[in-house]
Amino acid sequence: MLMTQLYEIYLENDETVFTVGSIVAETEELYIVESLDETGRLDSFQLRPKTKVERLVSASAYLELMEFNKSYNVENGSYNPLGLEVNYDDYSDLENAWYQMRNSGDIYTIVTSTHEEVLVGSVKDIFEKDIVIAAIDFEDFTQTEAPIDKNDIIAIDILSYENVLLQKFLNRSRKIE
Image 1: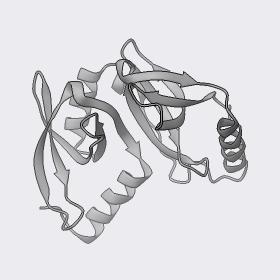
Image 2: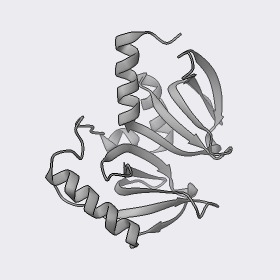
Image 3: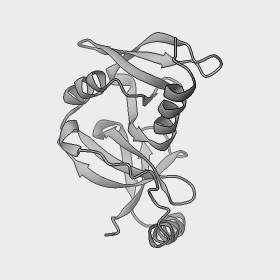
Image 4: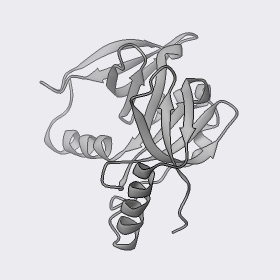
C-alpha cells in the first residue's frame, strides 16, 4: 500500500484540536480525508470544507509516531479490517454530497462549529441554507429531526467504522424509531 502524506489538520480558530489523516482527494471546496484513530488504523473518510481548515502540519513528532503506527497496521493487515472504501467522485462538492447522503439513507456523523456539536444520523431534507438530519439519541435509539446550518458544518464522516458498526447493530437488534 502506498503511504500517503499524513497531516495534522487544524480547524479554523482552534489551535488545540486536530485530526490526523491523509488528504486522499481534493476539490475546489473540499478535502476528502482518510482519518486515523489514535492507534494508526483507518477511522473514517471525512469531508472537510477548505474554508473551515486553518492549517495543515506535515511534520511533527506526533506525526512520526502516527506514520509508524499506520505502517505497522498496514504491514499486519489491521489497517482497514472492514475494507471501507469511498467513491470520491460522489463527493465532488458539498451540494452533491448532501444529495448523495440523503439518497443513500446511510448514517453520517456531522460536526458543527456550534460548540463542536456532533450529530449522528441520516440526512432527511436539503434546503438552501440548511440540512435536516434525523439525529439518533443513543440513550434509547430514537430519532429527532435536527436542522443544521450548512455554514456551521466543519466536518462530515461520510464513512466510518463507528457508523458502519452502528448500522449493523441497528439492523440486527432493533429499528430506530
